[in-house]
Image 1 (tube, each protein chain N blue to C red):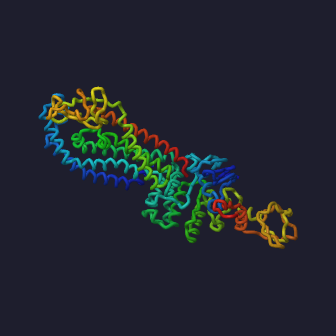
Image 2 (cartoon, each protein chain N blue to C red; image 1 turned 120 degrees about the horizontal axis):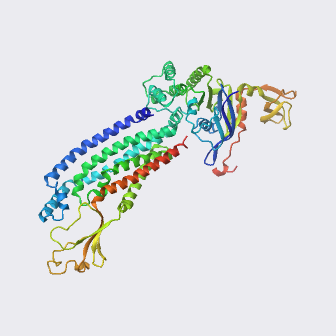
Image 3 (cartoon, each protein chain N blue to C red; image 1 turned 30 degrees about the vertical axis):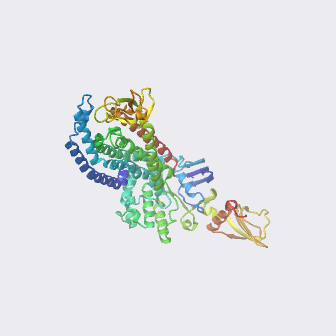
Length: 329
Length: 296
């Protein structure tokens, strides 16, 4: 069985590795350049310095300027990052969907399932080996992406918990990839032809990922709230690295005056013309900036929860697939 | 008499349509049996049930006394060549022989190589690039390397040209003659199999129409020609299989249970093909006038 699996998939494995190598050849130089710039702009220590309560105003400004300059130069790479999160879906399409669908489409399941190996064992060995290969692939991808996206993440306000970058790094790519492959296998046992199976895999993958990302992820833990004074010197105070779910300006009684925005007033709360800052918005004395957020230190907890969800879904799909297999002739 | 394959009121349903229904038959050991019926009669379904690819929805099927569905150990005794001889098209014949060795406990790789060498099959070309006849031979060699006690072949010659058909059947007969392997091979054309088989199962419209040894079937059927028949009993006739009438004359194909002595009838011997066609014509065709929206 192991020999057969290797013989059947070696070409595919070769092309996958080739693709991965090409991707690395493209991304590693960009990653190195990003790191150099990051260092040259003096941003290496910014994260730890900004995290301190007694950070000097000058340091804060230097860091913010550096981050902005870094962003000007590399923000377009966030588009590349969006492209990179499609890779697990591709693995599902090209490794998962054909696993059963191609056998049935070409009729070879009638050959292989009538040899001395039962189809359940066939399925377990095949799914196991392909799953293990994909696991290695996803781990390499996750580690590589963590390294590559690190400077971009640090320069962005929302940090590692941000929408696209969270999906790229750490252990979640493993969950996504296993899920995509399992979904492909499952789709192959239902539609039994390669193209429909691939189409369903893609649609299902996008649907489930979007649902988890938009509906479930913000609720893994109760979000925290934080308030900032609306008065202060220099650039507005921000919580760097936190994942801000909602923000706004509230009056002391809690009513929301403006959603999605912030206000920064000079000390004393009076504008240059002597009016009370923000009076035209309806701010009363004692108004504050408010945000609902997931703190940065929940990154690994969230990674763990999200990976767990997708690995569980993958196992469920594989279980159903093995059961469905018994009805295919 | 050992029974290799046994079905009792066996049925398989796809949705609300029965692909096979109330199928009862016995296949004695050592026979070369032809499974004949038009396309869609349920031949593949019966073979898939016998090799354990399908689970029966009704009745039982037993191969060597075991229920084949989910019975991995029982698979060792059954060689199966599916319709269109599916093989991994990017594998070479030599690799398929290795694959078979990895997938089976009992595997005579030397036998497979010997056969393929004798037939001039190139060992290092992907089987997808071989001719249909060569591919069928590879599939047969792989099935025989299992040293099966029952060999099931689903439409093995359907896609072959006449010469390749003959060569395929000849090499099949050559290899099972000594081993005593029981063979069940299906075809929608009796002519393909008539020369090699000694046992016959006729399927039509999901049901068994006729089953028995070829010699017995030919011996017990007769064609009677005589004056127009009104449906009364005729001495020595067990059943009228098929009747056609003109104004004054009737031609009957009958199953006999004794000599037909009535001098009014001219008795003729029949060929196996006559018998099979008579039973196939007996199967009723479901009309679909209402689905087509045309008057009946």
